[in-house]
Image (spheres, rainbow, N blue to C red):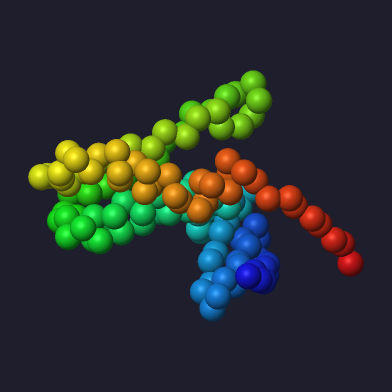
Length: 128
């Protein structure tokens, strides 16, 4: 995959990803806050990836998805200036079969974004 990045002005940064334009910006005072920040987009990608696996799990089994939800909360370690914990809460739809509780947990753990955090790739930077 190739992601092309451009700089439309201010602190905004745009990425062209498979024909989709993803815009980010920094909150004031660094930017104008016109879009989500890159780090918040990163967290949203974790939540939406895990959410997709929950949704797909239910859809494959014909389980109603009305009421299905997922939330992500972060805990910050101020001394290290980074996140210490990412808490994810899955809300199952009414009538969700109890026999699938552990299976949906395993399905959500298949999230590719999370897997890349657990076993991160190597970063290589070239400057021209």
